[in-house]
Length: 337
Ligand code: PHE
Image (tube, rainbow, N blue to C red; front, top):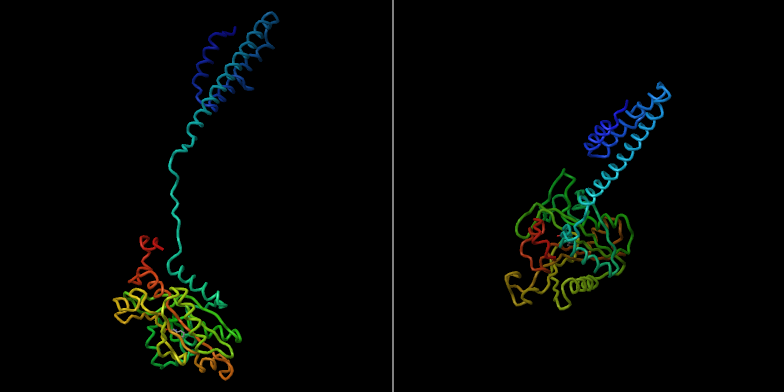
């Protein structure tokens, strides 16, 4: 005979031990599965005498109902516990402070570079680029500086081979662009240049902006007008401008352009070394020899060129006294711009 009381007792203690839905599933299989304990009891029925069958069948079915009911109760209890656990572990504390995402900003050199570009673009200039690893031919030769020219000494050159160098200025872009295009031309060429030099006002890499304008009737007064307009916009409209005779092999005549010292307004200070003037760029009328090198007829075309250092202009604009600050990546410095 089936001892339903002790059966229930064993079942209930096993049920009690089931602490998760998967453990509960094991209990369900053990009792109600195809090979489960209750299923096995029902199979006994067929071999029983008829008078026992009735009461035995009834007892087993009752037991089955009991087991099913208990399992269902336990299941919903476990489900509630699971839900509670998930709800408490997955809550979001909306009062916690947010994550700090630092915001980057433009480097001061790029910022000023962009201002320079914007000013020239507004005057109708295009923008050209050239390689930083350059041939001797474009950096020197085609700019009227043959191999033994003393002007080469002014530019402390990084050599890669005898013929391949790091460009020492952006002037080679003049040649490359004139080789590609016919006049009239009006463009600037911004970019990195390299010289083997390092101190408070020199770094081995720095930035220049070249300018070139070529047409049939470009004169020195066009050069003055364009550069004065530029200087008044990049500094301020009251800035005085001075052209001083100078020499570059690729321009003739050549000039060094100074601005009235923006720190002492011309009365003389440490920055302008008492002169009242600050040198900011080199310029001149394109040397006819350069036109010949690129196949332009110097009897027809004239032009002007200029080249400026972006670090120098940025230092003057913001009163920075050491060029190396631009490349140390000290955030305390960079965050000020
Ligand atoms: N390339 C010259 C330099 O770097 C600057 C310059 C450019 C001068 C164009 C005249 C004309 O020193």
